Image (cartoon, rainbow, N blue to C red; front, side, top):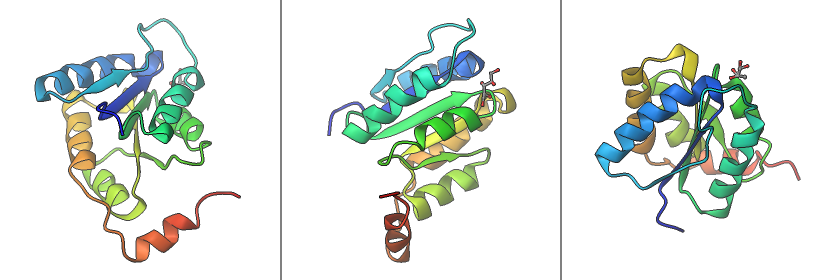
Length: 146
Ligand code: RB5
């Protein structure tokens, strides 16, 4: 496992929230890697979601945060990877439950539908919750498509 704790990626629609979350992560002294996009110029979420998903799968990053307008597109992309359990979250309680029950390793956020503070609350909830294990292990073991 590398020292990069969080990988973060967005398309143009998630760019502004990504930049705000990066500023917050700097303040918190998280070690992060920015996978782009690097501007609000129109771009395609798979171009950023796939590299982030690969980095999490390889263990280069412990967790990922993917952002697009709705969060849906980048969430679909990242969940194509067998080692990824990406959860689209719009409330802190959903982020807590997806860590506790699904052992989600990527958080997908709807950049056009969250304030900065709402997003920070969701990220904090996601990062501060441990997987509960127990009966949930059996369930997540049934997820991969062989
Ligand atoms: C871009 O306009 C938008 O379609 C994209 O960010 C995302 O919401 C797709 O799921």
